[in-house]
Picture 1 (cartoon, rainbow, N blue to C red):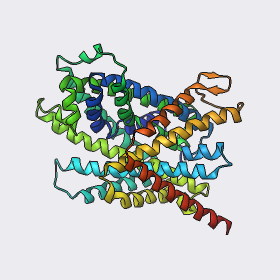
Picture 2 (cartoon, rainbow, N blue to C red):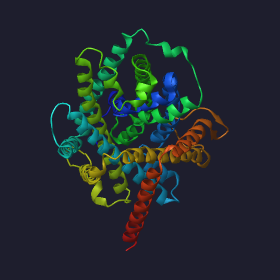
Picture 3 (tube, rainbow, N blue to C red):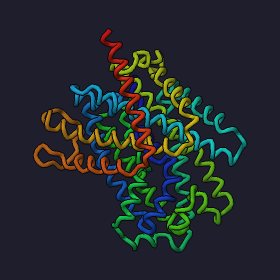
Picture 4 (cartoon, rainbow, N blue to C red):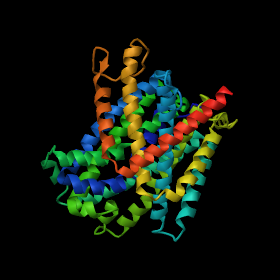
Length: 422
């Protein structure tokens, strides 16, 4: 695969994915729960996300191969090949369900500007980004850079409106750390997901051992600052009750501003949702490519386009699976299942890092998570506890869907294993 990506591109990939569609919806529900402690919830969620982000940075530089979670588990637990298959499949499911549900969200936003059938819009968006994915990672990265800058502009416009209010910043005087703030953090932590997708670009990074950890940390830092400003703006422009009732809080809270503001934010939401779809499809196609290259999926999906060195069969697989899920894409449980799968992967990754520290203490690690007691790393331990704890915040429907994915992966694993032995 072509090494085309610098720290600049990796940072924009991470920032673009984190600043995706989540902030446009989750901030309302979180504000209704945490009230004036919303900004504390964002800081707490950033802290929790950063714990696992450091684990990804260490493992990505220790095992610099495309495939992320799948590759790490496969190398650390070679005695349990099914665990690697399950972890990789969970991340494929998370990526595809994210791309599908956000494509549906894109279709909803575009209704403000044109009457286009939802299925047609989502199909076209998925199709266009499949082509962008196949054309090349460098071209994809510049599309992402432009879209991410537009996303940031939208959030800054919202913050600018908030600074006009005399209430801006008042919430900073209320520093709370209670059950409501923790519940708010459990909601907004999902707005930080996306940093883990950077690791799937490791083989296309020019200097991954230096740039990947920096890209992950910088993208989380930039996103945290923006989220903090957005949360203070939301509290300045509306009451917690108004936030809790709103499904589109950024647009609703700016209705009293200049007429161009809500419409502009609606247009920028198109770029935000589209960018999330693009990055989800790119990272998921790399996981499929990696699993096929390691012979845990049919080898046909490991094919690279000869001149551009892009996993074109993996890209087509993502498109096909997203289209298959499209009829259910508007169901909220599917989107929550994506977060559920991600939290499972986070838990496994942190446990895997702890195990590797004992298994191979002298292994070369270009980046190492700090603070340990002997061989025991404290930060990944705390991250594993946080990630596993958040698994209890989902609805019963999500657990049922997760169980269905587990059964499907188990059957697929048995079928593929039997074909290998023949």
